[in-house]
Length: 353
Ligand SMILES: *Cc1c(COP(=O)(O)O)cnc(C)c1O
View 1 (cartoon, protein in one colour):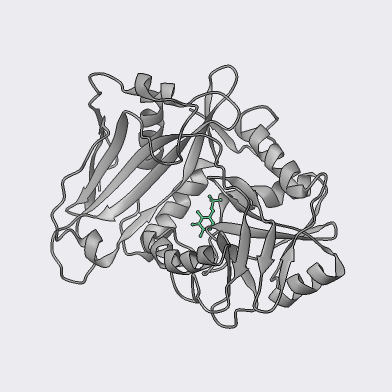
View 2: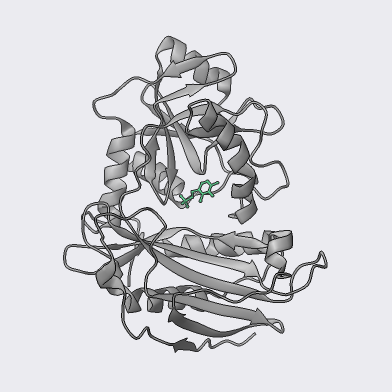
């Protein structure tokens, strides 16, 4: 492996930015002018290439199509009122990317390839990061097995890539959830803690069944007993009982979200009593019955915080109370204020590009 990773840049001849309506963005549909590509071959990372966004050529036998060696990250860049661009805790994403890579038997990406590549790419497409409420640039680093051949073994060639998509505030509509009593997202010793593409593939079918019943998402429970809450769809889960906020501890089944970690800290900063412990389905049902259950919300980079309006368990259905000043709102605002450089950054989460 080489220590210096040259970045070779090929710019677009003409930017497509003037054809983009930034007021009408569908999440994850529009991509910026450039992308990053770096190939791992012969046991090392080759030069980092930044080039016009466009199709890549792969053969049908490309291993990612057959054995699913694919991982990704989701992060955002924000612009402040004076035009400076910031990333939010990007080191955490890089570390998690490599934790995912390790679990999927893929090569780890050096910090300078990930970070310097990301910074160069954002600088080049800086015009695509818009200033304004809810606007951001969604960043999608990912890695796929790119070796050809259908032998079931880890690939000897990989592509690390970054694509970027201008995003408007992620609008989910009202979210009501079904508590999983049959399907599971992850199991002990599995890949639940990794951002493995296949985790999402496996969740689509159960989620479709929930949609058919009129629910937008699933609250995943532990695979062994289906008695404990684990995640809210593709987000980490928080529950408020009385004045106390509780979230499930992360483990090898629960993804260690950057938003989760940030919300835990912000709750503490706001003097909110915060607990990391298991939450049982029966505790949720009891809380709904005696009125101590105040809020349930999910946390993740794309939507920051998604309040959950109601849930259905095997024998109980409930609507959550409507609060004047829910924790979900207070904490979401506090996090966004840091992300958009509208507030102090006591924990050093912002990284200026
Ligand atoms: C990405 C992801 C999250 C949220 O992680 P963030 O770092 O907060 O974006 C939570 N759960 C799952 C399953 C995820 O894939």
